[in-house]
Length: 196
Image (tube, rainbow, N blue to C red; front, side, top):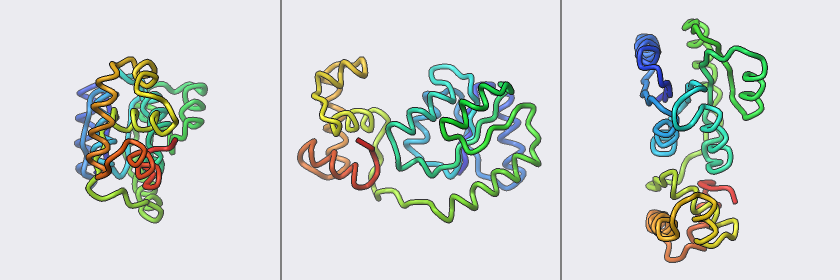
């Protein structure tokens, strides 16, 4: 499944139709927050992302994936954007984007890039931990816990309550099938769900 994150609903529908006609399975999200959640929840084969979006920009999404979820680093990430300036493209590439395509989109070129990226990813894709579906907040709180932060410190960093931090860490612990937060952090690190 390819995830397309595009806040312009008309543009998103055109991308979905064009890529579906070319044989791809496309799922669309319309803002950065729901896009990031979909990546963490569904682990797509490839991500097509706009840059300028509500809640989280495309740059924000890629930065958060880099910092929180190393198991997603092998997913090809392609920016589709109206920001055609050199500085934006340079920033996207520095963050680790695999490609940067300026709008209007040439769908023949996009198809060729997507097929090549999927082929390369298929050769090196790592298997995720079976039956473990950590959400965005669980990954964040567990990552900070693995870095030695207390619940109070994590709450301050993320701007949420200590109770909410403990709730998310407990959920992650249950999903990982362990009894302590230390065991959860170790298991998540070993399986590359987080990077301390």
